[in-house]
Amino acid sequence: MPRKYPTLTPSEVIAIIRARGFVYDHSRGSHEYYCAEIRGQTHYVTVDKHYKQFSVERIRDMIDQSGLTREEFYGSTKRTAKKINLIAPQYPIPLE
Image 1 (cartoon, rainbow, N blue to C red):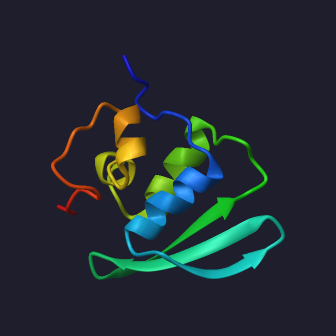
Image 2 (tube, helix red, strand yellow; image 1 turned 90 degrees about the vertical axis):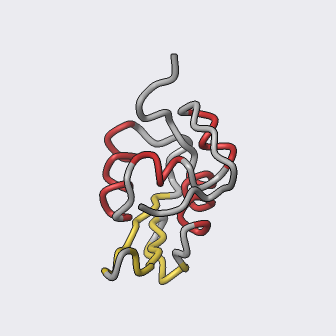
């Protein structure tokens, strides 16, 4: 049984948010900031590339920052969708 919030690497998180239309905004140290408009609101996601893998708390923070649901976040790429056993006809899955 998969975990509710499986761990992700910084490169997986960047692939997820880029698939959702986030674009690189700027960086400060090991932190990279990505920006996008989701559901009419501007959202910024901070990705700390220092980590090898993100903890559940960090992943939940990034999901909250992105304005996406857990399924929308993990369903952005086929690779990450498999981590939560999400099968869809296309990736990224459409936003609700």
